Length: 149
Image: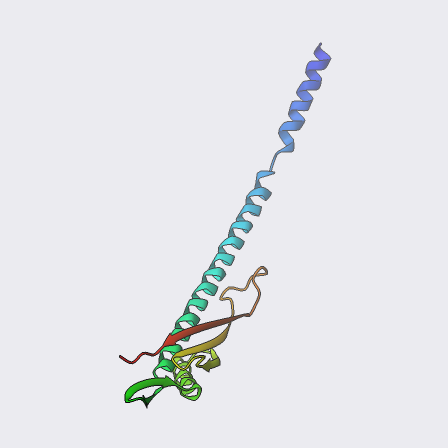
């Protein structure tokens, strides 16, 4: 019986020494994982804000393009109609005044009363990580209507 007790004592002693220091690699692994998650979340937030800024620029350019109308008189009533050249010139002025790297892709009028503007830019992550691509193309299209009352 004492042989079994000695064997169990040796097994317990060996098991007590096996998990020595095994918490440190686990803690370091979780620390690295937490750091990667924080960095990727920061990049995702930056991407979201860049898209929202581009949406705002497209909205402003479309609104300015809708102001590029010409007055016509049809059957004695004034009518405001848009021309593709007028929309483009107004939208180009807004995009140029903003001073970003955004470019005007397309500006025109599909129906003579709506100004449709498309702008594009490239997003670069503020924090470079292995999990986020460098240089994501962004594009935004906005439409604005002109009305004469």
